Image 1 (cartoon, one colour):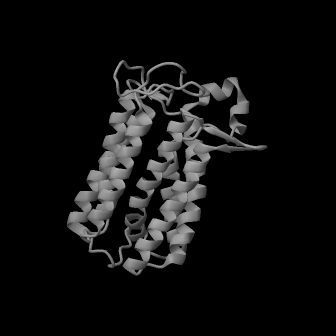
Image 2: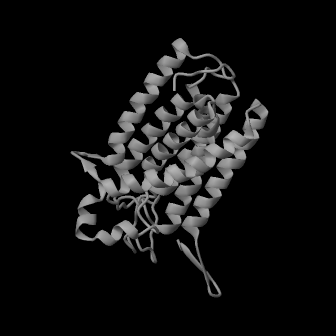
Length: 257
């Protein structure tokens, strides 16, 4: 896999290209679904840009947290914006920024969260393809025929058969995106799409973490992302139970957040 394409004097980083494709795909998918549901596209655009900025800040903040020891040894890591992004931090930061924007605009946050999360899952699938091309988020060594080898990666070990965790993650994210969009067409109670995303994504991420071999921080025998997955799973279960008892159908205002 080759991450950098050289076109004359121009170098194109495919990881960045795939992340950009993911962002734009998420916006287009969400806008199309918003119009079908009669939601305000202008609000959606505001949420999108707040989520982009909040996601970037959250992703970096979590990376700095799990890499604190390395930063103390080499503070220049703080200024390296090419590497060091953590997906869970991006999700948390993006959701928090979107919540703040909805509070400012006095619109129902959960309605828009249900709307955008299927598109977020699709964007994550695109981003994992970028990880695959760059060689980051790589898997453990394996003798399986279902393996990949890198020869020019700056992140993954080269010339070694590895579990293709990025591809498995990407397939799972795309599957989750289409499953959520199909589920949303049934007009479930408000918050249920968000709950299903939290539960299924967290389970998938927990399992994938078992096969990854890059450093991601650790809490005992769990990686940072596995610990967060457990919390997100519990949140998803709690939200599903709450929605079953209290939430109205989509289109009914909810002011609990």
